[in-house]
Image (tube, rainbow, N blue to C red; front, side):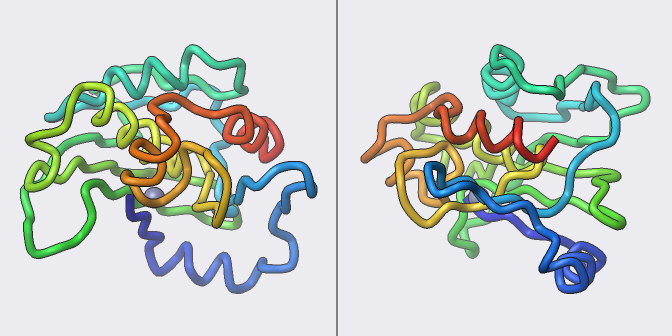
Length: 172
Ligand SMILES: [Zn+2]
């Protein structure tokens, strides 16, 4: 649900606000302003069911591939258990001059313990979309809609929608 850019990201966005990629009128995707300059995005899963989300992105025709590589991962995927926050998942990333250099994703098990496998995939695909460089659109049925109740409940999405895929292809 949530995405959190580190301070360095916020500064980069502030400085580069006018150069952010913006969608055409036919789509609603939003860029974070950060993209990977590596094609194979190396990840490690410490806990949580992230693989279905990984597989969902890798099944699409996009210019980046999530690759399991625990020894030299640049993306750490895991879980937290915190009922004092409102989000069911979170992604963080750092980037410099628009290039993502590392990222983390967390499933908040305080809320997801009752999720079906499909609902959980909706969440992990969403967080992995942030790590690829997509932010929250304000309307439409896209995997990057912030709320799980909208994205999964209303829209029934647990894999990337066409506009999400168009967004990834546009920012790379
Ligand atoms: Zn989000």
